[in-house]
Image 1 (tube, rainbow, N blue to C red):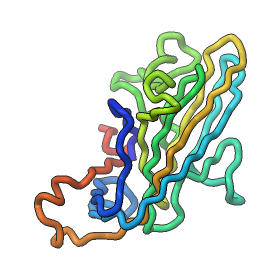
Image 2 (image 1 turned 180 degrees about the horizontal axis):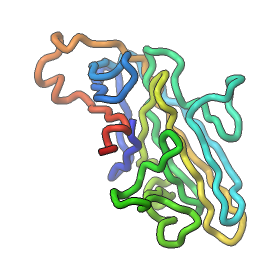
Image 3 (image 1 turned 60 degrees about the vertical axis):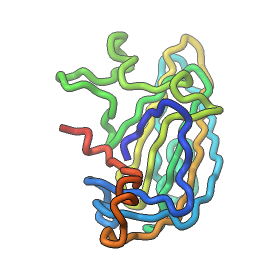
Length: 203
């Protein structure tokens, strides 16, 4: 999904909620409806020390040997019957840029108007911080499924000293079941949560 900033900490998907995957998702999910059969909430916190005026990249994929490491956080499901709904909050002064396929998500349309941590005019474009999404009440939301392009986060410390950033991931691990669109009434379709893949924002 494309990462989204919400006005307040959102409610998580619950049993029997319906979601609709739009264009761009892997074929198993693309343009299909799914019903949440069983949700499970899992807290996952990671802490990083980022050196002064430097960056550090995180990836939602898993390391080649499985598990997690400093860079790879294993925040993609491995089953086609699982959807991760992930809330993300921060504690610390560094800022965070969402990226997909090693490209910044928060950029404007004029050429070269995109985040650049080496340029004072562009280093605060397309970022999130603890002010927008606090650790205790995260307002950033991402969804992930198996075999999708892994989201990435670039952490940037613009302070003169090394700084700590604590990232809270609230992972709502949902078992989902495909629903035939013909078996949904108009009200159920209207209430379904629309999940948009990040590529729909490229035009």
